[in-house]
Image (cartoon, rainbow, N blue to C red; front, side, top):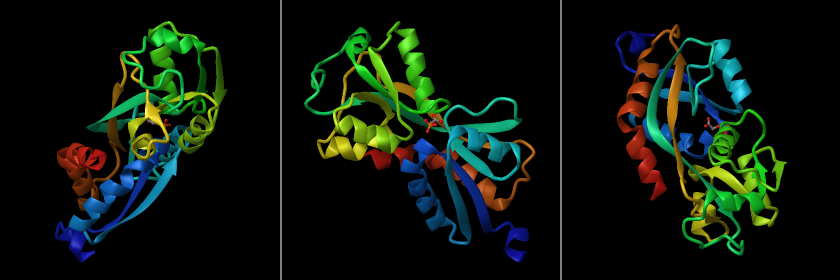
Length: 221
Ligand code: PGA
């Protein structure tokens, strides 16, 4: 259409966010949308397996995720740091302790995300790196369920900071000061190298690259 031919960013962008990214992607799209009112979105929130399939089958313009899947030709633009930490209920015995050694987690019941989750993967790497084998572990299917289970006193969880900001602020959860945390990874915007570049897609990549990090910081306040 005319606008697209003239280089004005317009049209619909198909964005897929990995589950944890649902806590911030709407905020980024809201700001981007204010600058590009002619662009609309279809936003899907999916687990890693589905994100991989959508990329593989050319069914999205971009994916917002941590570690990109292997085996697909992708371009990856890191746009913001991603912090992950252990959280507990405020009355937990480790709450408020300074510099908890990771070995102290051995006596804890850990609540885990499902297999394949990036959060789960990061937790397992942390435990392996510190030689920690927790007393018991339960697998729960979502960030929201993990938070509810921690609040119910079932155990402690390892979660993205994006997911627990509100609960920490309201005093329902506390971040545990475990040594070597937060674990810091990165958020990426990922798209297939053979995806045709459109003005709308170009504008989104440019926005995330130049302003994504600052927008994410602003959200944390
Ligand atoms: P998750 O992924 O929501 O599956 O844990 C987060 C990530 O990609 O790092």
